[in-house]
Length: 360
Image 1 (tube, helix red, strand yellow):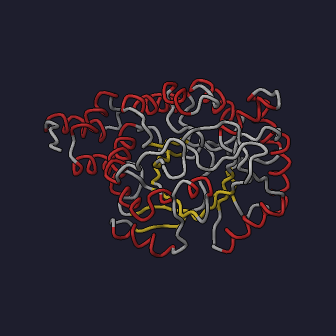
Image 2: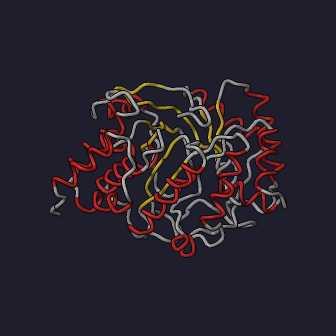
């Protein structure tokens, strides 16, 4: 493809990035559609280096514990879920959850994420009890991302609780984080096509605002490579940047990963690494109000570390996540091989502690 972005437009955007000014949605679209890879990398790196050391990338070793695969949302892009009473469904008990956490600890991990499904019998009080017991067992040795916004919403509604009441209940149980998982593409046209049993975009942001207002941390996420249009992708970024401003920039990070199409009803092909990197760069430049942009080792393996040259400053090294593994993701426990990929991209990886809620 011949890239045709004019030099004066590039210089204008460079000046805006250096001044810390937001670019317009039209500018972001022009960057994605017309700038070559070198220009995108340079501009995204300029934006990145205003906030982070130029030659350093941070990472954390973590696991996503999938405590149940029973879910009634029926999203067509998911290879993980089983309907109630369907063969292969499970709900882990407390000891089984702890065994997975202990396995992460053996690998030197410090961060545990929890991600399940829309289980029709689990009230929010059940989650709060589980998380409270886990905190009592592990104390402050580990950090926990408990639930996703999408699961939180479903459980609140099942429990006949407002989002504010639900966030308060989790906080009383010791929860510090409810991640932005379940966002996929935040555009109602996309949601009606693929996950009509979930929520509207406005409802998603209402729940996330309640989580933040309760003093809990949350994150921004996005998944690309389904059948979404560029208009739908940019709609996601636009609503996210606006929400981040309205909530005093309290979302700590943005993680974008790619749809894995294997064993799903939707099917399709996984997008190229070039497309992923270009979108990561545009996200860094457009989302000027989100400090940490994270690249996805979970879905792109070592190739994800190329993302450090396209605006990302942070990454996970995951030890498990059944949701993406069922759809074709592969997990590597050869940590040094992954870290070497970061070094080949020109960045020295630095092990970090989990971010603090609301940290900038």
